[in-house]
Length: 258
Image (cartoon, rainbow, N blue to C red; front, side, top):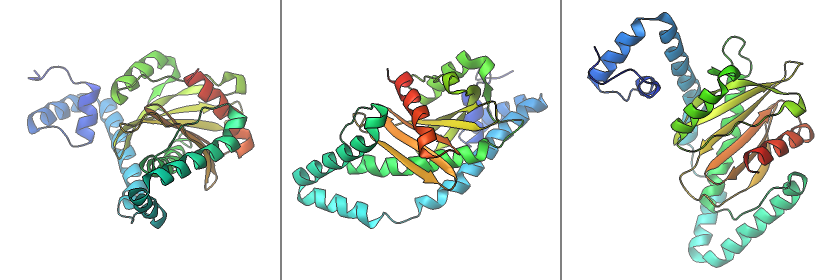
């Protein structure tokens, strides 16, 4: 009998991450051993961790780009001028992209810009890892949508919404929890009748929550529209061009932030 209560999903994620004490780890491993399906699920999470670490760990050792160091140095010397330049830069981005999407625009700090720069690659890698999956494209299926929302809201610590893209011909397949460098993130996956898949990646930011910025990136053959709104950073990814992805991003934004 467990001395710490029933085994929860938090326990399983902590076991995968190696964050349990010896006693609780033994209880979790005994519980897993009772059912091969439990082991398969936990090992799938472990594999996800390994794939994402393989994709991102090298980035942690990369030097800070010279352009970002220059921005920090300029801000130290002339904070008012740099702040004005940052606002002007985001207004330009908003004019180019926001006119098509009807998005709000806010100020972006150098730290927020640095964080935002990593978002499209994270989303594109997650898309490339999971979108080809046949048997396990998602962790929780669309038939358990309310459970998926409740679970991810609890794990991310902020209210999660799942956009409906049926008007564009994309049905929700489900979603999954993903590891990120600064905490958990999530991914929702959609599929159309032709089998094309689209993923929405989201993570929670603990820093400046007033910034909303919008950009488009191309990561190999994956197009990514990404933005920050309040506590959430979003990235919509798919093997589509900018013009095809634009109306989908528009729908996602307006459903999540009506």
